[in-house]
Image (cartoon, rainbow, N blue to C red):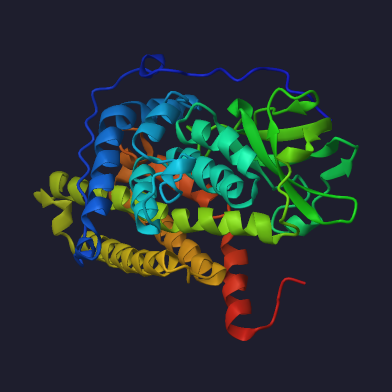
Length: 412
């Protein structure tokens, strides 16, 4: 198996990126007054994140994406605004809020960039959540506060080169070796892995049961090569995880969870955040298209005055509004512990597809300017092409809904 040949460069401050004079002019759009359904602290959390994004991330995000480099200094800022595990207990490094707060925070982050939301949702939903849910008390106390504060960066190892939509076919294994397990295998398409301090990894034991565990970077045999050449999520760092006879202390293995129920519960948590987050990307595209349509003149009047442009804008805000209501209702169910994986799949699939269509229409409204980094449209469009297929592909989520309504499994 390949070893990492280079150490990814960490960009640890805003000064590492070229500053631009471009202002973040985004204004929130709420056509059906969905805000009336939120609590005051939901709106306060959203405002705190929005203010931070406008001040600290918007000025550098285009440059980071163009250079294909992750602004890792933002992990500390994400922690400070409560973006890591907002709905986990404060005693374990979370925010102590509810699932709707988690959703609106993810929406504000993805309004800026899907990669930024990925940085946060992986840390909170795919690393902190399984440790909180399944690890021993000792492991929780050891890792969760440092993850919540941004001192540690985490990643989540489930997908493999030959096991994507079918995680049950994973080949990564752990074998009991007395006081430790020996871990061998490889994971692919892992957000944060080249810069992570630890990984939550899923592997099969000698009985073929899927087990979860925390593996620290720097353990002999652990490597995390970066994946280069991405056209999407360029401001988020992605890599592999390679394990060659890695010794994992038995205490780091989750004691009471067996099978795919463990990793799939984490994916449900992340998919829920994506269902909210994708709306943010759609809102940013709509906001830019609306402003551009009112300012750009052709044939003696703003292009927003033409019927076809109004059709685009009206359809955009209609679909965004439907997604906002879908996400809010899902959030109320999640707060009651009643949101099913199938309901989450429906919202993830619908809202990401909606955002991608909004981005495409917005790109057309911007004309040639839509492909430049003067506007966020093409960056969102490229990012959403990935969001459409990660945490469960568009088609897999369709089949999850089909299975739920028919009772018939179309997967195999």
